[in-house]
Image (cartoon, rainbow, N blue to C red):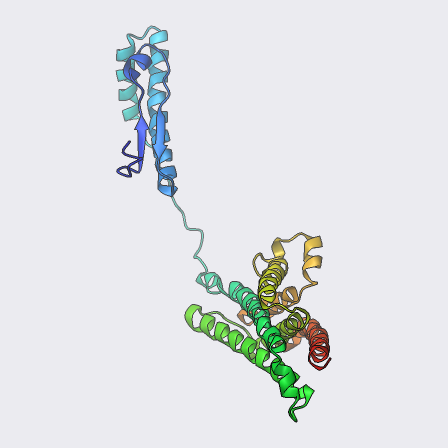
Length: 303
């Protein structure tokens, strides 16, 4: 058909003998075919409206014929004349007020903070494979054979990953600010949350790279944990959409605390003092992860 060949968006299939069937008081099924998409669904509503109008005229004609008002054809003609003379439905629109244009100004704010948290963590975990290669190739051990202290090697690995996480966070903040007008609120509070979450991501990456021995495995697990924690922590679906029990579970992840912190300051609604509870929890996550990662990495290169 023309619809199948793409020559028409939709089509109405009228069965053979349609006029005779409805003229004799019978019923007929009208078919409708359309290409996939929203336009086909919209056209279906138009076709259904036209069919309803025709059905109304037919019912009126049959009723008039049954009441002895003349033949079916005469009753149909009278029904059409009567329908044409009826007043149409009019819609009156009244403005009850003016729209607040400022409501849409922050439509990117929440999404930007969620994407910031998601990508900082995923990228940090994705870089854990390089730490595994450093151990596997013996680079760290050769560095320790020089006068370089173990704490210097560990500090270098840690600060390098922290710098990458901070750079990515800075890029996302500046790009969203310049391109989409995202209001990150108090700069000091936003910077505090970004730095603390970068430390969390660094600690998680160091720990993953110290525990695993295969870079491919680290890449797969890094993506799994990164996206999984993001989904659970409210970076993909707002925490407000979770039931109360799931919101409690979500806060076992640092992501949920970071999301809460940014929610307090976005749009200029808060300052450093308002995010101190969330910042304290993020600092706790960072300390535990970094201390565990440093201990595990030191053991793996000095044993």
